[in-house]
Image 1 (tube, rainbow, N blue to C red):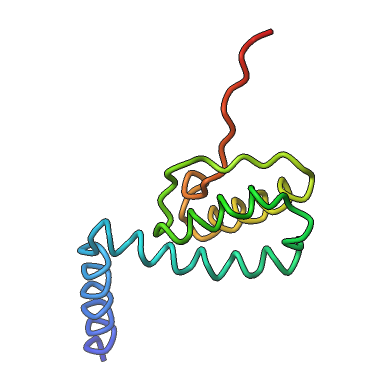
Image 2: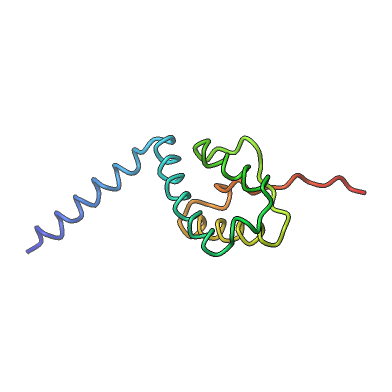
Amino acid sequence: MFALPLALVAVAAVFSQASAEETREQKRARRCAYYQEIVRVAFENVSRSQMRPGFVAEHDAFIEGGCFAAKAVCPKTPAEFAFADILTMMTVSANMGSTFTPFRCPARAEE
C-alpha cells in the first residue's frame, strides 16, 4: 500500500536531481528555446511593423546569439514598450527572471 507513494517519491527525486545537474549552457539553451516560443505570442499582440527596424534587428540578434545580449535592446516607442513588457512578464511567470530579456536602456546623463 505504501510502495506506490514511495516509488513516486523516488521517481520525483531522480527527475529533480536530473534537472539540478543541468549545466548552465543546457539551462540557457532550454530557456532560449522557450523564449523563442513566447516571442511568437508577443508578436500576436504587437505587430513587428509597429516597431523600429533597429529595435527588431537588435532583438533578433539576441535570439540568434543564443539569448546572450552583446548589446542591450532599448525600447523607445509605445509598441516596443508593450512588446518588452509582454516578454518580461512572461519570462518572470516562467521563473526565468526579468533579467533574462535583453531590454535595457543606457542611463541618461544628468542635464
